[in-house]
Length: 219
Image (cartoon, rainbow, N blue to C red; front, side, top):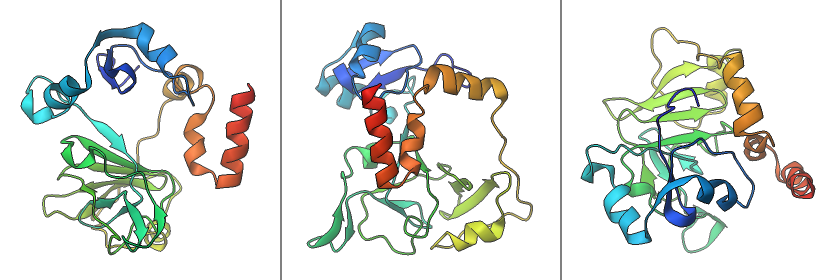
């Protein structure tokens, strides 16, 4: 809508290329995706010709992923929590995350159990320059391969980030404050991109999230 109005979206439903902004939906995404598609591809074409960005210089794909764990070198885990053979939690898996050249990560709840000193399992990584967005700040993997603080959000303190981070961080001499979204951007987000406020689901504990999902389904 604002940052990249000419951006193309590759949708897994129908392997469709869409040139219009997409509304966030809990389900039935095909009703928003298929009618607006400008082209379709089969599974093999998408994964061999379009997804690997290094094969096509004129196409630069980026993806946002949410890791269960991330360490100070930008390695991530999205497979298991605990021992691999007897895990406490089984996660969705790596899928194509290790193959992506333009992956960014987002973490709705910045916690020690996410920012860890040692991963339970390594299933992905972020490349140098890649960014990590959390509810406390923005971080990136610097040239030395270490996670560095890029900025912290308004009202957040360095101490708060340290208390909720289980791995080492590189701190700049001067810590910038993250640029806040404009009223126009928030208005578009709430009215056109996410009118059902689905983005908050990932920040809620399970009981509240389940209740909100039921409300959306009933609507």
